Length: 130
Image (cartoon, rainbow, N blue to C red; front, side, top):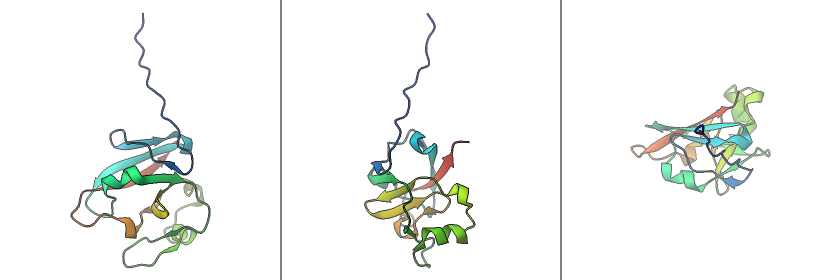
């Protein structure tokens, strides 16, 4: 008899579903075609305990994102354009805590949602399947 290295397939996340628990430093989102990587950060990150409250949603238009603490929230489309994020990289999942947009692939964690300086935090990075 041959031993099987069968692993349970990750459960896909539907839009507006709770973010699944992390496996190590990554969260597989097969329904979105990629993986969310979690990396320790010294600044501009998210408090780890907030991960359990996040939901995953698709872009619907009209989202607002604040890139830096000394800036104002702007339309997500304008933020992408200002940061030269190509249109083909704008289709990843958006992460929300309630009604507040928290993370945008290609832009990072909204400045209003970042963990305070000196606290444990994680940088999130979206990697689409190739």
